[in-house]
Image (cartoon, rainbow, N blue to C red; front, side, top):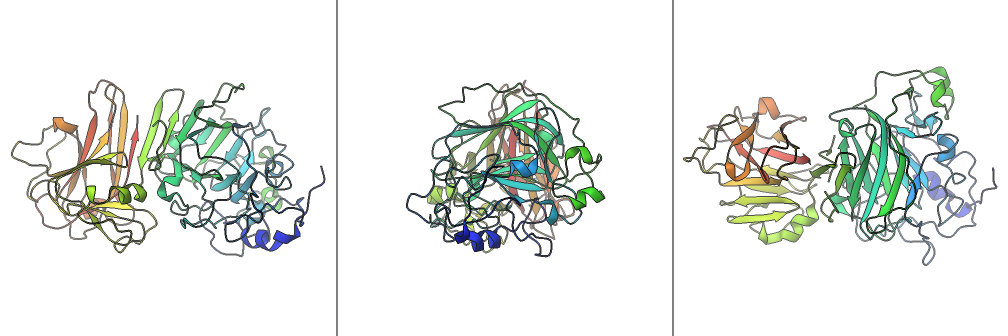
Length: 517
């Protein structure tokens, strides 16, 4: 193994900030955290001046050296410990530091039950398996849980993502879940979507693992980033993913090298707690026994966030079948820009933003229509009526012109006597199969009746209906409505509406929208 440079001047920074959470989320306690997340063979010294200082600035002028795109990764390291060292792939800014850095789920000594969360497979040609874990690509500061939404703090990555780019990988296998997700973030080393200077649009992939089809290449196109960005990949708990042949390239300058055909492989033996896995931080996949469990949200709806993505959205797709998943989170920057074109007053990040009367406008890739004011309210993350880290839309009354209009049954048309005064329209492509899912939570404990529906655009035919009463959709979990149509449809939009079913109270938070097509 080659000699490693040392870096005394940043020992305090790395040991303080290199602590890892014991799971895929935020740190819980310091009891199960290591003194350092650096590989055991990495010695620190003062020979480098390129690592960013704690205030987000570079410690030397022009200190960040870019790692050029395209980047192709086939995971042919000896094992996961080797993969996460500079010996395998180093930063350009400081060749003694690793290009890949685990922000959660590694090393094994930090995991209470001793079950690995990120490993390389033991196949002839390796792949990367991970679940309940996170790692970054090109982060020059070996840190976790330190990025924020503060736009005054400079980014500290080696990737120039100021041009539209594409990230793709082969899905070898998954432990599929319809509620747990794989995610990709830009300039965010935490598990929370809000902690990036790019706002909610930094989460460019937000995909349920059940939507990741083994044997297909999954692709995300985006333009979210800066000239000094880094990426973070995350898979939630209770699920896992095996990926191979990862490629990061510019959309206008595709990679010209050969990429192996993507094939499924379910032969990996998933690890479980054993005495050997607890004792070793580098337990190989061959020493682990099979596991029937893993864990199993987010915006596959996410992915989270087709085509080249603007700053307010991202898209993900499977190149094998042309399926693209688009999700809306929602991006507060887009709504702040819309301002009084959408809202009755100037946009505020600290309170409700009520839709104005006469709105007929597309914002954030969704179309909003309302003949009445205040029927919809946009509540930014952390605002007066939304203490969470994610924004949402809140309904304030029925989308019909009155509370007494009852929602028609699936297959029926909206009656001519009923006036739909407000709706949110989700665009779809005619002649192409799609699935739309809208997640919502009932906020009124007195809402003994309420329904939401998806209707066929201007055809006003009801295509799906869901119970939105507090009993069905209240509490922390909420509920969802899903619509799937095959390629014989001729729709170009699907409209979401809410009805109070004859009572005068109740409303829902529309937490996210997902379209797969």
